[in-house]
Length: 75
Image (cartoon, rainbow, N blue to C red; front, side, top):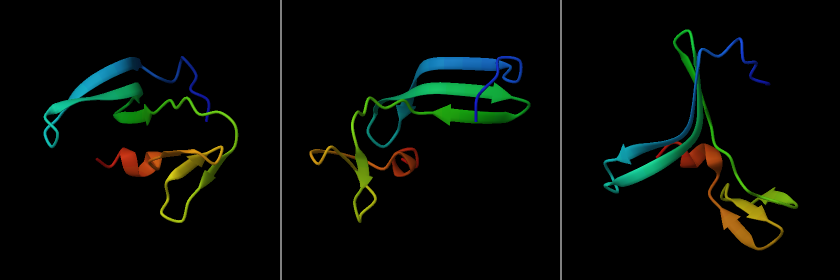
């Protein structure tokens, strides 16, 4: 889905929100808001081939392991 400028009333980039579990700030890359709806976008700097392990984590180029982004946002 491509976000068109006319459709989104508000756009927020680089937000920091408090996380009560870790007592630190967590970053949200992009939030688009329209008519009571919000779309949260996480930007990743991955390159090359990305595969998914049996436990749902992402494996980049056979080396770096990253949390599943869908699970990451549930925190």
